Length: 517
Image 1 (cartoon, rainbow, N blue to C red):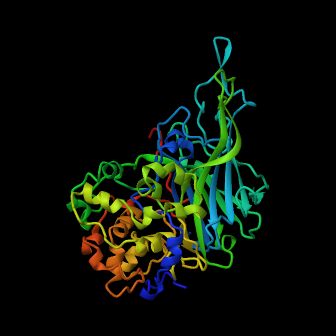
Image 2 (cartoon, rainbow, N blue to C red):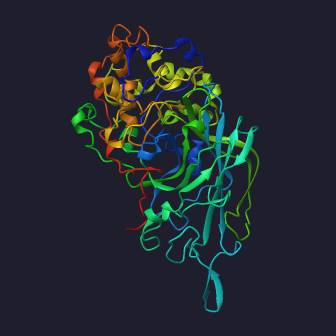
Image 3 (cartoon, rainbow, N blue to C red):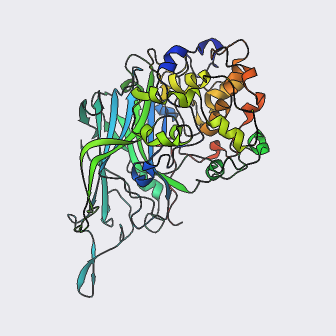
């Protein structure tokens, strides 16, 4: 087993080509997953944007694994008066595969309920002798989890399902204090006049919980957070509208602004002891989904109440899927994006060509006006191993079935924040460092997945593999297959992920941007 104190050894990276090519999906991509498919743009409340899975690096929580699933991206702090309550007619899920078979063994299911106070009547003011319902979610300062000044109460429940997510055994996660299965979600960060100290207010919504089948207490938080992803988003989608000298000069990392620095997301967070996630193998795989009811009936004459226009029913239909960052957004072809969002890891063979013959390097050639710079090793076995099966000896399950998900070796100790290499495993390959706890071995908020992915997709791993196949990526994956040569190691998006402010402990993602300051 490889641990954080040891650099990756060349002989640990052997490639299981025949296994991987039997069922694959997609390589890494530029960014987190915002508005990545045609249908998901119509239902932003179920749009999964980022998934983090890592050994907790808070000093006294190192035996725990943090799972953070972000939804409803690109939230503006000033987005009132309704702000960003999640959809009570949707099912939000975090899935764990703990035996490598590309099927979920544990699923954490989140359901939400949004209700008006006073038994659904809401809050009213006496205006000219008539009691009139107010138009805002609040009518005074808010200081605690059940503040009477809130007109809208957001609550949620969490269940753990063992086995198949639809037919397995489901049990409620409960509050360790009092045993309730219903939890309060903090209202979004409306502004200083409404919530004077939002950090303290939100912290009251971090719960210690009991998970059935787990003998160690866990932590739970659901609420608005500042988006921790840093990316030069507009520039990237405008055909990488940046000078080549910028994106290949490491001294210019941080030269461009983080275009989503003022955006918030809604985070579903769990911190679970690693022993409660594993099952005879230290490596776990994880991904998130969101599902909606198959039928939606809209009432043209809704009555009073909250979200009274919609009546949902029928079977659950998956509409969002996210494991590795932004696979769907810039790797899967436009015609198959909705199809990918509806798919399961066990069916990923249908997307095989998108990873063995990725279009992203060819698009970069066009966008950067640099002809003949895409790697020539086909099929791209370097990407298949690193991002599809996991790296043998690092984060590959014992009996892996190739499929797209985030994989984490829970036996590799966490690295303190200050010592984390922003390039994760790629940084180790380049510098022989001592941080094996980062992307693609899981994903931490500090990991610069944009830069790591650029290096990988443009052949950096083949450069590291050398002519002798020392990393086990296959004889075709060698420096002569990388027209960019050593320049592939210098690719970046000019934004510094490591500079994003974070909390030192769970839920790690920072206090959301307020509506007013």
